[in-house]
Length: 146
Image 1 (cartoon, rainbow, N blue to C red):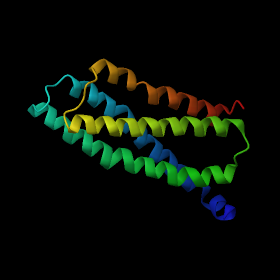
Image 2 (image 1 turned 180 degrees about the vertical axis):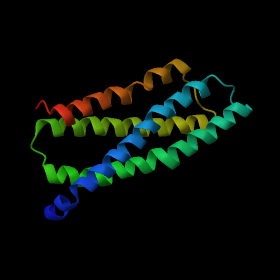
Image 3 (image 1 turned 135 degrees about the vertical axis):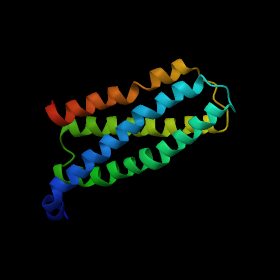
C-alpha cells in the first residue's frame, strides 16, 4: 500500500492542498455570513436569502471539501508516518478545525429555524478560530519545529 501511495504522492498532496484551500475558504466565509445574518430580522427577505447562501456554502463547498481533506490527508499521514511531533500537533489542529466545521453547521441550523440568539459580535470572534488554527498547521507543515 505504501508503494502505491508513494507513486501517487505528489498527486494526492496536490488534491489535498486544493481541498484544504476550498475548505478554508468556506470556513472563513460561513461565519462572516452569520455576522450579517445575525443583524437581520428573522423571517425577513434578507434573512431568507442568507439561509440559502449558508446552505449552499455548507453543502456544496464546505462539507465536500472536508471529505476531500480527509480522503487525501489519511494516505499522506500513512506515507510520512505518525512519529514526528509536528504531525501530532497538526492533526490536533485539524481535529479542532473539524470541531469548528461541526459548530458552524449547528449554528447554520439555528439560523435556518430562526433560533439564533447570539449577537453578530459572537460570530466575528468565531470567524477568527480557523485562521489561528491554520497558522499553527502551516508552521507545523512548513517549519516542522518538532
